[in-house]
View 1 (cartoon, rainbow, N blue to C red):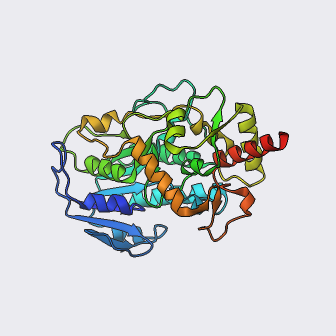
View 2: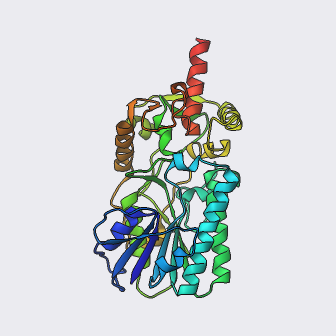
View 3: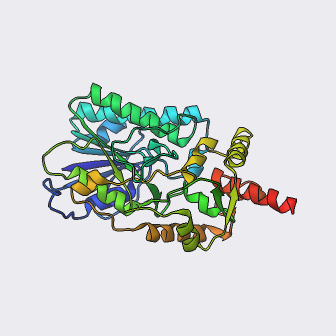
Amino acid sequence: MRIASLFAAGIAAAAAAPGSGPAADSHAIAEVRLLAGGRGRLPGVRWRLTDVGSPEVAAALTGSDVLVWVAARTDLQAQAHGRPTDRRAALLRTGRALVVSAAALGVGHVVVVTSAEVFGALPDNPVPLPDDAPLSAVVDEGAVGDLLAVEAFVEESRVNHHNVRFTVLRPAVLVGEGVDTALTRYFEAPRLLAVRGARPTWQFCHLDDLASAVRRVVTLKAGPSMPVATVGCQGHLDLGQVEQLTAMRRIEVGETTATATAAQLYRVGVLRNPASELAYVMHPWAVGSSTLRAYGWQPAYDNETCLGVLLEAIADRHARPGHRFDRPDRRDAALGAASAGVALVATAALLRRARRH
Protein backbone atom coordinates (compact mmCIF):
# COMPACT_ATOMS: atom_id res chain seq x y z
CA MET A 1 0.00 0.00 0.00
CA ARG A 2 1.25 3.45 -0.93
CA ILE A 3 -0.17 6.51 0.84
CA ALA A 4 -0.08 10.08 -0.44
CA SER A 5 -0.69 12.77 2.15
CA LEU A 6 -1.37 16.47 1.54
CA PHE A 7 -0.43 19.05 4.20
CA ALA A 8 0.02 16.42 6.91
CA ALA A 9 3.66 15.92 7.84
CA GLY A 10 2.86 14.43 11.24
CA ILE A 11 0.28 12.09 9.77
CA ALA A 12 2.69 11.03 7.05
CA ALA A 13 5.38 10.20 9.60
CA ALA A 14 2.96 8.19 11.75
CA ALA A 15 1.67 6.31 8.73
CA ALA A 16 5.22 5.30 7.93
CA ALA A 17 5.70 3.85 11.42
CA PRO A 18 4.80 0.24 12.25
CA GLY A 19 1.16 -0.27 13.19
CA SER A 20 -0.48 -2.55 15.74
CA GLY A 21 -3.86 -3.93 16.68
CA PRO A 22 -6.01 -6.83 15.48
CA ALA A 23 -7.99 -4.73 13.01
CA ALA A 24 -5.05 -3.05 11.34
CA ASP A 25 -2.21 -3.86 8.96
CA SER A 26 -3.97 -6.28 6.67
CA HIS A 27 -2.21 -4.16 4.02
CA ALA A 28 1.44 -3.37 4.60
CA ILE A 29 2.38 0.27 3.98
CA ALA A 30 5.18 0.21 1.45
CA GLU A 31 5.59 3.95 0.94
CA VAL A 32 4.32 7.25 2.28
CA ARG A 33 4.51 10.32 0.07
CA LEU A 34 4.07 13.81 1.46
CA LEU A 35 2.79 16.26 -1.15
CA ALA A 36 4.25 19.62 -0.19
CA GLY A 37 5.53 22.90 -1.57
CA GLY A 38 8.97 22.41 -0.02
CA ARG A 39 11.18 19.51 0.95
CA GLY A 40 11.71 18.41 4.54
CA ARG A 41 13.08 15.41 6.37
CA LEU A 42 10.90 12.76 8.01
CA PRO A 43 11.88 9.13 8.63
CA GLY A 44 10.28 6.80 6.11
CA VAL A 45 8.58 9.59 4.15
CA ARG A 46 9.20 10.44 0.50
CA TRP A 47 8.68 14.14 -0.29
CA ARG A 48 6.98 15.09 -3.54
CA LEU A 49 7.20 18.80 -4.36
CA THR A 50 3.78 19.57 -5.79
CA ASP A 51 1.71 22.54 -6.89
CA VAL A 52 -1.80 21.40 -6.02
CA GLY A 53 -3.23 23.93 -8.46
CA SER A 54 -1.52 22.34 -11.46
CA PRO A 55 -1.44 18.99 -13.32
CA GLU A 56 1.54 18.05 -11.13
CA VAL A 57 -0.95 16.60 -8.65
CA ALA A 58 -1.71 13.68 -10.94
CA ALA A 59 1.97 12.86 -11.33
CA ALA A 60 2.48 12.95 -7.56
CA LEU A 61 -0.46 10.61 -6.96
CA THR A 62 0.49 8.04 -9.60
CA GLY A 63 0.85 4.62 -7.99
CA SER A 64 -0.80 5.65 -4.70
CA ASP A 65 -3.49 3.51 -3.07
CA VAL A 66 -4.69 6.03 -0.47
CA LEU A 67 -4.87 9.83 -0.40
CA VAL A 68 -5.06 11.73 2.90
CA TRP A 69 -6.22 15.35 2.58
CA VAL A 70 -6.11 17.50 5.72
CA ALA A 71 -8.67 20.19 4.87
CA ALA A 72 -8.73 21.59 8.40
CA ARG A 73 -6.49 24.64 8.76
CA THR A 74 -4.07 24.72 11.68
CA ASP A 75 -2.30 27.99 10.85
CA LEU A 76 -4.51 30.91 11.79
CA GLN A 77 -2.11 33.45 10.33
CA ALA A 78 -2.17 31.83 6.88
CA GLN A 79 -5.95 31.58 7.02
CA ALA A 80 -6.25 35.35 7.49
CA HIS A 81 -4.80 36.27 4.10
CA GLY A 82 -7.20 37.22 1.33
CA ARG A 83 -10.97 37.39 1.21
CA PRO A 84 -13.03 34.59 2.79
CA THR A 85 -14.67 33.79 -0.55
CA ASP A 86 -11.28 33.42 -2.26
CA ARG A 87 -9.99 31.24 0.59
CA ARG A 88 -12.95 28.89 0.33
CA ALA A 89 -12.77 28.75 -3.45
CA ALA A 90 -9.06 27.84 -3.29
CA LEU A 91 -9.78 25.10 -0.75
CA LEU A 92 -12.46 23.57 -2.96
CA ARG A 93 -10.24 23.82 -6.05
CA THR A 94 -7.64 21.82 -4.20
CA GLY A 95 -10.24 19.23 -3.26
CA ARG A 96 -11.51 18.88 -6.81
CA ALA A 97 -8.00 18.54 -8.23
CA LEU A 98 -7.14 15.85 -5.70
CA VAL A 99 -10.35 13.84 -6.04
CA VAL A 100 -10.52 13.98 -9.84
CA SER A 101 -6.87 12.91 -10.08
CA ALA A 102 -7.35 10.18 -7.49
CA ALA A 103 -10.39 8.77 -9.31
CA ALA A 104 -8.64 8.85 -12.68
CA LEU A 105 -5.50 7.16 -11.34
CA GLY A 106 -7.27 4.38 -9.42
CA VAL A 107 -6.58 5.67 -5.92
CA GLY A 108 -9.17 3.58 -4.11
CA HIS A 109 -9.47 5.40 -0.79
CA VAL A 110 -9.57 9.12 0.03
CA VAL A 111 -9.44 10.22 3.68
CA VAL A 112 -10.47 13.81 4.37
CA VAL A 113 -9.76 15.46 7.74
CA THR A 114 -12.19 18.25 8.71
CA SER A 115 -13.24 18.99 12.31
CA ALA A 116 -15.88 18.06 14.87
CA GLU A 117 -16.81 21.74 14.73
CA VAL A 118 -19.03 20.90 11.75
CA PHE A 119 -21.53 19.41 14.21
CA GLY A 120 -22.06 22.87 15.68
CA ALA A 121 -21.95 23.87 19.34
CA LEU A 122 -25.53 23.93 20.64
CA PRO A 123 -26.97 24.16 24.17
CA ASP A 124 -28.92 20.91 23.73
CA ASN A 125 -26.16 18.84 22.14
CA PRO A 126 -25.83 15.38 23.71
CA VAL A 127 -22.52 14.66 25.41
CA PRO A 128 -20.82 13.01 23.68
CA LEU A 129 -22.11 13.56 20.17
CA PRO A 130 -22.50 10.36 18.13
CA ASP A 131 -20.40 10.01 14.98
CA ASP A 132 -23.51 10.23 12.79
CA ALA A 133 -24.96 13.36 14.43
CA PRO A 134 -26.34 15.94 11.97
CA LEU A 135 -24.09 18.78 10.84
CA SER A 136 -25.67 21.79 12.53
CA ALA A 137 -22.88 24.37 12.41
CA VAL A 138 -23.58 27.85 11.07
CA VAL A 139 -22.72 28.35 7.41
CA ASP A 140 -20.91 31.70 7.17
CA GLU A 141 -17.58 33.17 6.07
CA GLY A 142 -15.52 31.54 8.81
CA ALA A 143 -13.28 28.49 8.91
CA VAL A 144 -16.14 26.24 10.02
CA GLY A 145 -18.12 27.34 6.98
CA ASP A 146 -15.14 26.30 4.84
CA LEU A 147 -15.19 22.83 6.35
CA LEU A 148 -18.93 22.50 5.82
CA ALA A 149 -18.30 23.30 2.15
CA VAL A 150 -15.62 20.59 2.08
CA GLU A 151 -18.01 18.09 3.66
CA ALA A 152 -20.67 18.92 1.05
CA PHE A 153 -18.05 18.43 -1.67
CA VAL A 154 -17.15 15.01 -0.27
CA GLU A 155 -20.80 13.94 -0.29
CA GLU A 156 -21.05 15.07 -3.91
CA SER A 157 -17.88 13.13 -4.72
CA ARG A 158 -19.30 9.93 -3.21
CA VAL A 159 -22.05 10.12 -5.81
CA ASN A 160 -19.84 11.08 -8.74
CA HIS A 161 -16.89 8.73 -8.09
CA HIS A 162 -18.16 5.26 -7.29
CA ASN A 163 -14.68 3.75 -7.70
CA VAL A 164 -13.36 5.73 -4.73
CA ARG A 165 -14.11 5.06 -1.06
CA PHE A 166 -14.28 8.21 1.08
CA THR A 167 -13.73 8.54 4.83
CA VAL A 168 -14.19 11.82 6.70
CA LEU A 169 -12.40 12.20 10.04
CA ARG A 170 -13.64 14.91 12.42
CA PRO A 171 -11.17 15.60 15.25
CA ALA A 172 -11.82 17.61 18.40
CA VAL A 173 -9.69 20.70 19.21
CA LEU A 174 -6.30 19.91 17.71
CA VAL A 175 -3.12 20.46 19.70
CA GLY A 176 0.48 19.71 18.90
CA GLU A 177 3.52 21.19 17.22
CA GLY A 178 2.65 24.05 14.88
CA VAL A 179 -1.09 24.11 15.64
CA ASP A 180 -2.44 27.66 15.91
CA THR A 181 -6.22 28.09 15.69
CA ALA A 182 -8.90 30.37 17.11
CA LEU A 183 -9.69 27.72 19.71
CA THR A 184 -6.09 27.31 20.88
CA ARG A 185 -5.81 31.11 21.14
CA TYR A 186 -8.69 31.09 23.61
CA PHE A 187 -6.02 30.41 26.22
CA GLU A 188 -3.93 33.44 25.22
CA ALA A 189 -6.30 35.96 26.81
CA PRO A 190 -5.47 37.33 30.27
CA ARG A 191 -8.64 35.66 31.60
CA LEU A 192 -10.82 32.73 30.59
CA LEU A 193 -14.00 33.91 28.94
CA ALA A 194 -17.10 32.50 30.65
CA VAL A 195 -20.58 33.21 29.33
CA ARG A 196 -23.35 33.19 31.91
CA GLY A 197 -25.60 30.16 31.66
CA ALA A 198 -23.33 28.35 29.19
CA ARG A 199 -21.84 24.90 29.78
CA PRO A 200 -18.79 24.51 27.54
CA THR A 201 -17.04 21.18 27.09
CA TRP A 202 -13.35 21.16 26.28
CA GLN A 203 -12.12 18.10 24.41
CA PHE A 204 -8.81 17.86 22.60
CA CYS A 205 -7.12 15.70 19.99
CA HIS A 206 -3.34 15.47 19.80
CA LEU A 207 -1.84 15.37 16.32
CA ASP A 208 -0.24 12.02 17.15
CA ASP A 209 -3.67 10.55 17.94
CA LEU A 210 -5.10 11.94 14.73
CA ALA A 211 -2.20 10.34 12.87
CA SER A 212 -2.80 6.97 14.52
CA ALA A 213 -6.50 7.26 13.65
CA VAL A 214 -5.61 7.85 10.01
CA ARG A 215 -3.32 4.84 10.03
CA ARG A 216 -6.04 2.68 11.55
CA VAL A 217 -8.54 3.80 8.91
CA VAL A 218 -6.26 3.14 5.93
CA THR A 219 -5.05 -0.26 7.17
CA LEU A 220 -8.37 -1.77 8.24
CA LYS A 221 -9.05 -5.33 7.22
CA ALA A 222 -11.63 -5.89 4.53
CA GLY A 223 -15.10 -5.15 5.84
CA PRO A 224 -17.73 -2.43 5.88
CA SER A 225 -16.62 1.01 4.80
CA MET A 226 -16.18 3.81 7.33
CA PRO A 227 -17.81 6.92 5.81
CA VAL A 228 -17.29 9.15 8.88
CA ALA A 229 -15.58 8.94 12.25
CA THR A 230 -14.77 11.34 15.08
CA VAL A 231 -11.39 11.55 16.84
CA GLY A 232 -10.86 12.84 20.35
CA CYS A 233 -9.62 12.18 23.86
CA GLN A 234 -11.78 10.18 26.22
CA GLY A 235 -14.36 12.43 27.90
CA HIS A 236 -14.04 16.19 28.28
CA LEU A 237 -13.15 19.00 30.69
CA ASP A 238 -15.63 21.52 32.05
CA LEU A 239 -14.75 25.17 32.64
CA GLY A 240 -14.00 24.60 36.33
CA GLN A 241 -11.47 21.90 35.48
CA VAL A 242 -9.89 24.14 32.84
CA GLU A 243 -9.58 26.95 35.40
CA GLN A 244 -7.87 24.63 37.84
CA LEU A 245 -5.48 23.14 35.28
CA THR A 246 -4.50 26.47 33.74
CA ALA A 247 -4.45 28.49 36.98
CA MET A 248 -6.28 31.20 35.04
CA ARG A 249 -9.13 33.24 36.47
CA ARG A 250 -12.35 33.59 34.53
CA ILE A 251 -14.20 36.71 33.49
CA GLU A 252 -17.94 36.20 33.19
CA VAL A 253 -20.03 38.14 30.67
CA GLY A 254 -23.53 37.81 29.32
CA GLU A 255 -24.14 36.02 26.05
CA THR A 256 -25.55 39.14 24.41
CA THR A 257 -22.50 41.20 25.38
CA ALA A 258 -20.04 38.56 24.21
CA THR A 259 -21.78 37.98 20.89
CA ALA A 260 -22.33 41.67 20.16
CA THR A 261 -18.69 42.51 20.95
CA ALA A 262 -17.40 39.72 18.73
CA ALA A 263 -19.73 40.70 15.88
CA GLN A 264 -18.66 44.35 16.03
CA LEU A 265 -14.95 43.49 16.10
CA TYR A 266 -15.42 41.14 13.14
CA ARG A 267 -17.24 43.84 11.13
CA VAL A 268 -14.40 46.32 11.58
CA GLY A 269 -11.80 43.73 10.61
CA VAL A 270 -10.14 43.19 13.98
CA LEU A 271 -11.33 39.60 14.31
CA ARG A 272 -10.70 36.96 11.68
CA ASN A 273 -13.53 34.66 12.75
CA PRO A 274 -17.27 35.45 12.74
CA ALA A 275 -19.13 35.84 16.03
CA SER A 276 -20.92 32.55 15.39
CA GLU A 277 -17.71 30.69 16.26
CA LEU A 278 -17.95 32.03 19.82
CA ALA A 279 -20.45 29.20 20.38
CA TYR A 280 -17.59 26.68 20.56
CA VAL A 281 -16.49 28.08 23.93
CA MET A 282 -20.07 28.36 25.18
CA HIS A 283 -21.87 25.12 24.34
CA PRO A 284 -20.98 21.40 24.24
CA TRP A 285 -19.63 19.65 21.14
CA ALA A 286 -17.56 16.79 22.58
CA VAL A 287 -17.47 13.57 20.54
CA GLY A 288 -17.31 9.91 21.48
CA SER A 289 -15.11 8.40 18.71
CA SER A 290 -17.22 5.25 18.95
CA THR A 291 -16.62 4.15 15.36
CA LEU A 292 -12.84 4.15 15.68
CA ARG A 293 -12.95 2.58 19.13
CA ALA A 294 -15.01 -0.29 17.71
CA TYR A 295 -12.00 -1.06 15.49
CA GLY A 296 -9.55 -1.00 18.39
CA TRP A 297 -8.29 2.57 18.17
CA GLN A 298 -7.47 4.28 21.47
CA PRO A 299 -5.99 7.76 22.02
CA ALA A 300 -2.56 7.91 23.61
CA TYR A 301 -3.26 11.33 25.15
CA ASP A 302 -5.90 12.46 27.62
CA ASN A 303 -7.47 15.92 27.80
CA GLU A 304 -5.33 17.04 30.73
CA THR A 305 -2.12 16.16 28.91
CA CYS A 306 -3.29 17.83 25.70
CA LEU A 307 -4.10 21.02 27.59
CA GLY A 308 -0.60 20.94 29.05
CA VAL A 309 0.86 20.58 25.53
CA LEU A 310 -1.18 23.60 24.44
CA LEU A 311 -0.12 25.74 27.41
CA GLU A 312 3.53 24.85 26.81
CA ALA A 313 3.24 25.90 23.16
CA ILE A 314 1.69 29.21 24.17
CA ALA A 315 4.46 29.83 26.69
CA ASP A 316 7.05 29.27 23.97
CA ARG A 317 5.39 31.81 21.67
CA HIS A 318 4.96 34.64 24.13
CA ALA A 319 7.10 36.97 26.14
CA ARG A 320 4.07 37.91 28.26
CA PRO A 321 0.38 36.91 28.21
CA GLY A 322 -1.72 38.31 25.39
CA HIS A 323 1.17 39.68 23.30
CA ARG A 324 2.68 37.89 20.31
CA PHE A 325 6.22 38.56 19.21
CA ASP A 326 6.64 35.71 16.74
CA ARG A 327 4.46 37.19 13.96
CA PRO A 328 6.15 39.50 11.45
CA ASP A 329 2.92 41.39 10.75
CA ARG A 330 1.77 41.79 14.36
CA ARG A 331 -0.61 44.67 15.02
CA ASP A 332 -0.55 47.10 17.89
CA ALA A 333 0.16 45.24 21.13
CA ALA A 334 -3.03 46.59 22.65
CA LEU A 335 -4.95 44.18 20.45
CA GLY A 336 -3.24 41.27 22.14
CA ALA A 337 -4.42 37.95 20.78
CA ALA A 338 -6.77 39.64 18.35
CA SER A 339 -6.77 36.74 15.94
CA ALA A 340 -8.94 34.72 18.30
CA GLY A 341 -12.38 36.16 18.81
CA VAL A 342 -12.83 34.55 22.18
CA ALA A 343 -9.57 35.97 23.47
CA LEU A 344 -10.30 39.49 22.37
CA VAL A 345 -13.87 39.42 23.66
CA ALA A 346 -12.53 38.40 27.06
CA THR A 347 -9.91 41.13 26.93
CA ALA A 348 -12.42 43.77 25.84
CA ALA A 349 -14.82 42.77 28.59
CA LEU A 350 -12.01 42.95 31.12
CA LEU A 351 -11.06 46.46 29.99
CA ARG A 352 -14.67 47.66 30.15
CA ARG A 353 -14.99 46.28 33.66
CA ALA A 354 -11.76 48.01 34.71
CA ARG A 355 -12.97 51.35 33.35
CA ARG A 356 -16.26 51.06 35.26
CA HIS A 357 -14.34 50.60 38.49
